[in-house]
Image (cartoon, rainbow, N blue to C red):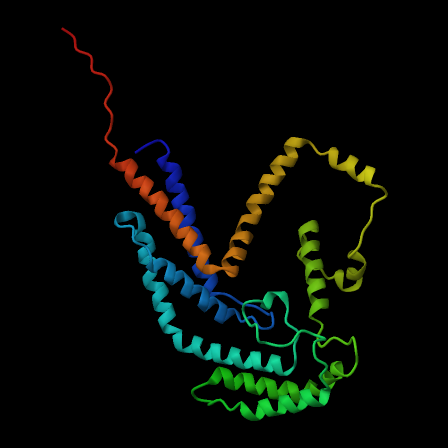
Length: 297
C-alpha cells in the first residue's frame, strides 16, 4: 500500500460518516415552517438515500459497508410507507386550505407547490368569498377516522381554529396592507437571536424581547476608523480564524445541500466513496518493487 493510502482511508471514513448523518437527519427531521412537514420531508430524503445506495455497483470490500446500510434504510421505508402516503394526502389538503385562503407563496415554496395560491395583490378577494370557500372545503373534507387518523387530526385542527380565529383572520382581506400572519416578524427576531448567540456566545436571548428592535441597525463613527481596526488584526490570526470558521460551517453547509437536493448530495458522496475505494484497491494490487541486489564473492 502506498504512503497516501492512510489519507484515503480517512477520507472514506469521513464520507461514510456524512452518509450516516444524512440517514439520522432523515429520521429525525422536524420543522415549524408552514407547508414544510419534517416527517414527510425526512421520508422523501430517506427515499433519495435508498435510491443512491441501490446504484452502487463497485464490487468487493470497497462498498461493503454502504451495501450493509441499504437493509436498515429499506426496512424503515417499508415500515413507514403507509403513514407517509397518508401524510402526503394530508399535505395535499393543507395546500388546498392555503389556496382557499389565497396564502401568498414564498421563495421557499418554488418547485414544491406551484399551485398553492396566487401572489398577494394579483386578484382582489373579499372576506365573504374566502369564508364561503373555506366552509365549502370543510364540508368536502371527510376523512375516515380509523383509516386516516392524520387527515382526521388535520380536519379537527382546521375546524377548531377556523371557529376560534376565522373571523379575526378575515379582516386582512378587507383592510389594505394588513398582513394575514406575523411570520415575517418572527423570522426577523429569529435572525436576531441567532446573531446574538453567535456574537455573545450566550444561550439566553431574553433581552431581545425588550431591545431586539434597536439591534437591527448599527453605525460606526467613520469608515476610516473601521478600516483601521480591521487592519490591526494580525494576518496569521485572521487566516487561522478563517480556517476555523470554514471548518465550523462545513456541517451546516452539508445539511443545507442535503435538504435542498438530497438525491444529488448523496449521489455525490457515493461517487466520491467509489473513486476512493477504487484507488485503494489499485494501490493494493500494485506489486512491491524490490530494490537492487548486491552479490559478493
